[in-house]
View 1 (cartoon, rainbow, N blue to C red):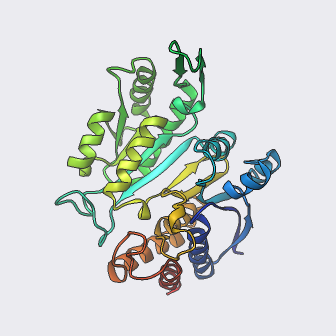
View 2: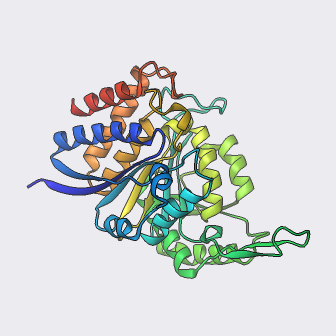
View 3: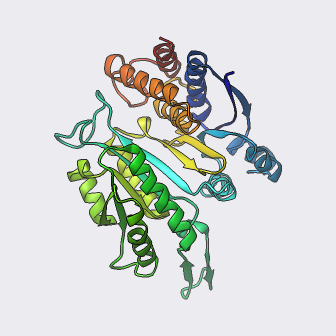
Length: 354
């Protein structure tokens, strides 16, 4: 009896619907080849809905999202909506309300993809960042006093709980073990300046470490982490860090792996509903032109299948992407791939089916 999965699909804004369409095309090919089925339910969440109705993420829709096996997101962000509204009310609210406490970002350079790092190749750039996703500075804790005056005060507080830190660290230790590459976990922080928050992270890190004797531990300040990601990315296997530092270093990771066109990620609740997405955003200037690179969205779909325990299908998608990059695509940049968005999706779906 084949497995059946209920997937909530949020195409979103800009080029989001275009890349999600190609991702679904590849997922459909994988489902037929590997004997599982998907029931897809689409949601019109994003900038256009907000412009028409003033709604961002209604409680009724959020309740529906809780019922799925996984969520598949295209992009959120609209040029006609003030920055921060959609991001806070849709993206952050989804992560917080569904307790997607892990942001998982593979940083992997594929053969045939150019990196700005001189003399570095696929064997050098292959690590994963585990970012705490529901605490830190992104909780919105703080406020202002005397706003708009010369005496204005702005306070933004970083909230770090023992529970939140420990569960993130345990996920990272387990992922380093499962990944089975170097079994090395690097804590990225700033213990010399952020002495309260990262004292908690550091203490918890080394208290948990003995439970994973096969995983090597390491520590690096966030500024040093950025330097080593550029100079010696091969030093890293799995990096674990807080919400803000994770947000920053994963964008650097996307650049060294060849750009936003290949960068995907997951907002993970290991005990609940997780959401998978390309990292590149809505890219509104490319909307409707059939030029945007769908590979990140396709890889996000493969990542989703991996966490649904469809490992053979997930591997087939990644292998098919690698084949297409190596044999067929000229570039990862929008408009320079040598074929259109739909044609890339057709090509990778065909490779999966074969």
